[in-house]
Image: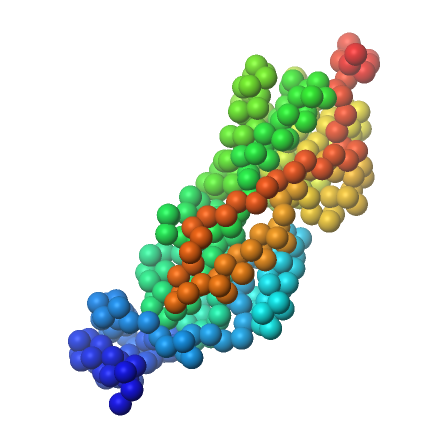
Length: 343
């Protein structure tokens, strides 16, 4: 009997089940009740079991999104694909269905697939899922975490706070003092960090933040369209809008067009992400670039370089940069119905 088989036998005895049941639990197969599965998982943890190396690594990386169809997702995929190709691996995509946390059905499937590593985008994992992946030696890394990750959760993000600072300073340097913000989901760390950096730059410059001109969205074009129309029809219309991502900014561009306003003559717009579509818009969009492909590549490499399923780096933040295009300009000084450039 091999050492691994002997260990499984001890775990089976401890959990009062057969070795075949332990094998089913380890590999995420069906036919085991929730109560029995929990008992086996506890026995695995108690014995400190880790699956042998030849059972851990399959020739692909699992990449997990809420939704795959976005331009944001395409950039992450490019980076993960680069890392996979460099190691002779392929990439498998899965979706969580508009949830930040993958459900138990995904976990059962990934335990069966036994990928070389898992990269989760905008996702977190409950403690039980983390333990079950660790027991099978399946390393995971989170990209751009939606929440504040625990110290033991490896993640790769971008400098969101600094990105917010860059956006605010650019608009301030142009002369804007009345600036609206359409953020992403309020419960997402990246949204809060971008707003925090933006407000810090305003505070540094002694410019009041317009709390009446703050809206929280969901990183969707529709948010920019709906909130953009609302903000651009305020009695004290802002001269600039900072959008939480490029899709939202494109919605603001459309809102301005529908209201007969010119960008950047009547309102300046700054996005976030620097997706490829940002350079195609009319006018091309000034935005904050976060290196999405590099983030995906770094996360995949961290997972693939893990030893025994444990990723050494707890948190990696890549730099953000300002990309100036044609959607921002100095504001106009309104005099009655007429507008003239600010001196």
